[in-house]
Length: 269
Image 1: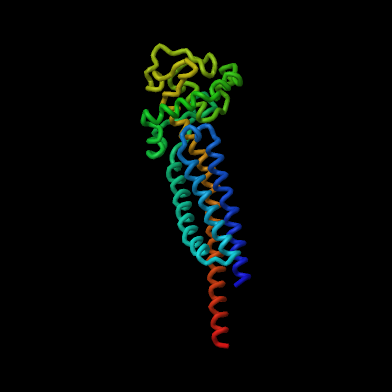
Image 2 (image 1 turned 180 degrees about the horizontal axis):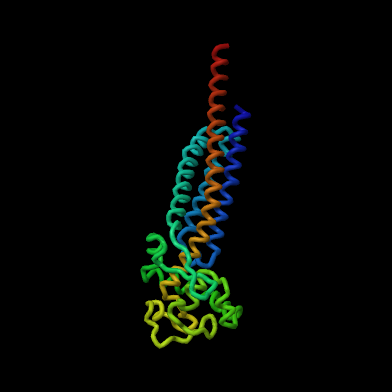
């Protein structure tokens, strides 16, 4: 039993270590400017990682100090957390399976349309009371001002591979036909009614295209890219956690078998 208890404790120590990439993924998402403005995924991931850490710690203590109640708690609670992590992994994949950028005419950067993304993601940005908060957060960053410092000519800007947020929020859509002055200042054409976003554009540096659907789509494109990276880490952690849990269950079963066999021998002798 002592050897099996040590094995159970060691296995749960590994489970504790596996909570680190989950918590780290949540912290990484929280530090990204777009995710920090939206605040959807990071806290569920961080909380789930902390719960995995706490439950694994309980199993570690129960294994090394031979406390069956803690081991039983670990077996039940960790199974629930593994299921929750699996649900989260599938959910992230499903809401990010749609949506991609489109090449603009005579441009190297991509442009984005809101309708290309999943309905669940669109609902996070379409309601005005939600978008107003996100918009204020995005406009307080320096991402658009940095474009002015980096690209001084139209040719350089049109050949640039700017990110989804910069493409959607810092400039008008290409189809509007605006004339480039600098990345965040454009001259309006005589007729700019090709798209509602064309009417939303404002050269005021705190306005730009932050009210445009293209800005919302650019935000979702950025979220998709970051959430997909996070999903890969969570998937690998999920597989490792399932393996550790299975080995832990086997070790606990062996420990119980050894204990019953020892008691049987003592009773027989």
